[in-house]
Length: 439
Image 1 (cartoon, rainbow, N blue to C red):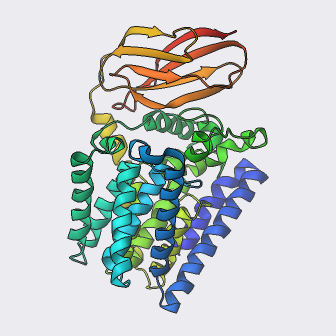
Image 2 (image 1 turned 30 degrees about the horizontal axis):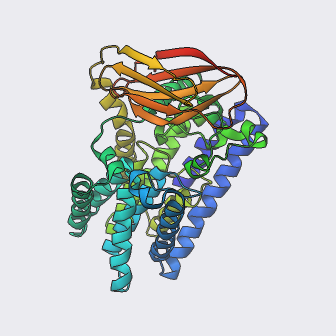
Image 3 (image 1 turned 120 degrees about the vertical axis):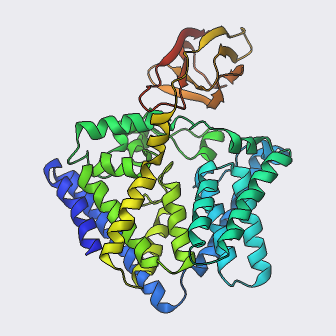
């Protein structure tokens, strides 16, 4: 029944949108059903999620090796990188490793290493979403298992290490800004308002979000750090991996109200089926917690999203009570909506003022300083297209940005965009722009 409801929630909204949307909806449905079926088969073998821990350990090792190869001893000053995962996603994977190490009976040396490496990866990625997932996943497992206290202790350990060790990047754990997500959320909500019943179609929603937070075609941060731009052949497809950074908004934008209802009912069914099994319930809750600020179970992905539906299949093999599933679906909806409650209740910030903006000749750098606390700043360099310089800065401090070394001659626009971290109703409307030339 749950899977049928999910299938209808994908296919029915896509019918009026044409053949392309219907085909993409059908492909997503078949992929998800295949993953859930694989999870059911995995549960019947008695193996369960244990192999995931070994895969995560290899992921941690590869991420550390890649980051050291790029940053060397400065790795503690830069977020951990991986060729096929974002730092936020890596941090979430660290949280999953900690939960697995606490609940499963691995050989004790590996169990200790998996938990240690999970904490280390979470610390070096400074993923606040990953920390939130560990906290809520640990709290959820407390319902059935006292080891949930150890997961919450791991959260305290990460925060203590971030505060006590000289790991500059870990100071992100103590920052309240949303890294520009509020601009994405606002745009996603506007798309839903325009298409409330059908959305724009699965995998087509990203075309509406391109350029709001990142460039129109953005590769994994690892490749961007190495100077590898999105190739021209992939630029038209950049929307395929542009997300709303909230699963409820993603579903609303892709398939309207029916699609969002189908997603939360399926998630509620997974939780209901996992009820009484501490680890499964904990892992699924970690995914849903992360879903407030990211899209961890969007598929296809570099295996992260697939694990959610595999775990859901493992849970469904235990059976599910529909009334409990519907009740938990309501809880999932509330959970995924919490960021908007937070934003709606925050006071508006006073507008910032410019202190100075300068580009010293011949140095290839620019400097900007503003008065006003609480804003985040992005710097864009635009000609026919725009590219982002650096990542994102605290606008209350002087900003120093570097121009690309391979910049062709010509005239460009430098744009400083300020984002408010507090109000969903406030657009990223503060913009400073001026023209520069490269002789």
